Amino acid sequence: MAHLTHLTLPTFGKVEQQPAIPNDIYRQRMAKLTALLQAQRLDVALVYADREHFANLQYLTGFDPRFEEALFLLDQTGQALLLVGNECMGYLPDPALGIKVEMFQELSLLGQPRGASRPLRHIFADFGIGAGKRVGCIGWKYFASHSGHALIEGGALALDIPAYLADLLRDLTADRAHVVNATALLMNPVDGLRIINEPAQIALCEYAATRTSEAVFALLQALQPGVRESDLERYLFSDGLPLSCHRMISFGEKARRGLASPSQNRAKLGDTFTTAFGVTGALTCRAGAIAAHAGDLPAATRDFYPALAHNYFDVVATWYENIRVGALGGHVFAAVEQKRDAALYDFAVNPGHYLHLDEWVHSPFFADSKIALPSGALLQMDIIPISRGPFCYINAEDGVVLADAGLRDALRTQFPDMWQRMQQRRQFMQDVIGIALHESVLPLGNMPAWLLPYALDLTLAFAR
Image 1 (spheres, rainbow, N blue to C red):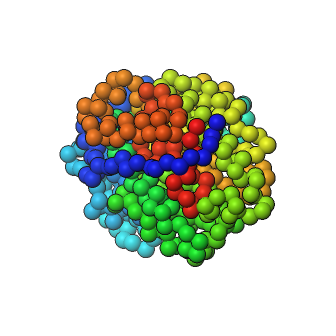
Image 2 (cartoon, helix red, strand yellow; image 1 turned 45 degrees about the vertical axis):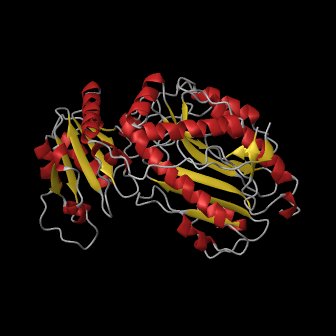
């Protein structure tokens, strides 16, 4: 059972040089998508991306749009074409990848020049999109039935790309049924390409997780009554990694709006706080009370909050103890649901999900899920409690990777320093915090399972 104890968060260290994804890996990813096109009898994949929805395109090519939208075309033969706007012409993938690039200025911001581009119809036709061809559109979301109930009509014909693209593709192929949603090829929770990660991608995400976790720890060290939310934003440093979401810091009643950006709001003794920091490849979140002990809390939560916090940590520990290569998502869901005290709080969303360049890819954690967690999966421990009593909040989010014996050997060989950090984090979680981890669970960040309910005492954390 959860109890509070005095413990010191160790210094696990971090790599200073950001790991790179070699071009060979991008080539392999494009080849895998080409093979899926052949298997699905799709002639062309069209990948749509913008600043917010960048991850599928960056996964395939290393390129993420800046300011603008972008389109990537790939056919069954491996022919590849990237369409970008004016400003991205100076920010392109490595030419060694062999991706042809063409400027299509309607991807640019309004008011910029439009006179140097061919019509999109001609570009698509020259790429081979015509009558009888089948096109798989990859955006960032596909629409599945839930318990036989579909919220979006159309099934595979429901697209999440702009209408001007959908309309043109349907006209060129001369058959509406030939233009389908293929986002699941990359993002479905069973065998989507982005679910299983190579050692180099894991190393990049570990690099990111050390940055987000150490930044949140620095913020917690500076959190005191009287400080403004905006004063603390400076501690959420990314070392140049792009953000995967906006920075979040909230105190008091504003913490009810957990997704809010920092404001001029000042912290008060007894306030609830929440903060989250996400970059490409990682997100760290912590929430709790701006207090040194339960006596600093308002009378309304003085008894309720400690009970919620203790049970929440037991749920978190249960999640960690049940994940492993081969575990069923439904088994993990059932274990944490059984541990949750339903009189205290509900889960806001799924208890955990897949993690990648974007913070949420998909989730295998739902009731009766038969999805087996694979080796190479990046998972986010993301369990959000919604109080059933007076408003109060506690939360912790951190990432792990699941690795079978073969992948563990590869990580140990290719990234020995990272491997040592992972082993030190495992030892801390097991020997100090008391969470029994399966050998396939490798923590990514530098605050592994470290959860303090009272932010003004950084030595007082939960253990089992």
